[in-house]
Length: 154
Image (cartoon, rainbow, N blue to C red; front, side):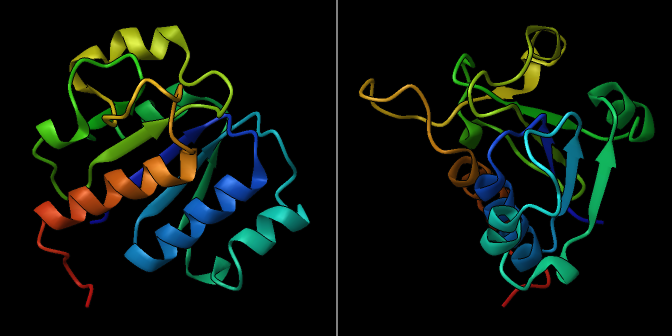
């Protein structure tokens, strides 16, 4: 098994490239939900992921409901600034899915309503609206890996 990052309609290629690099480094699967705000042959996307794209297990989906349908047994956690619980309040398991929304708007209301029990936030000061998407994804993945004692990583 492996952890999963799901990006719902990501807009900035450099963020997706950075997340892909984190996925390559950790064995985390990457799911990209259309529409994407960039082409997958975008130079910025490729540059941010460096030469690690071959090490990324990546799937493309036409909708978030398609992800839910395909992975019905999965546990989904939703990153949002609107959550009451912190990401560190959860006990993660191998195979969990971490869902992130687009950089400018976050996750759609209907996704957050359905996932409010597992909605999570990163603590931060009121000086900013949110953290960078790629930083948020890395924080959550590494917390989950820490809880799992960094399986197969050295």
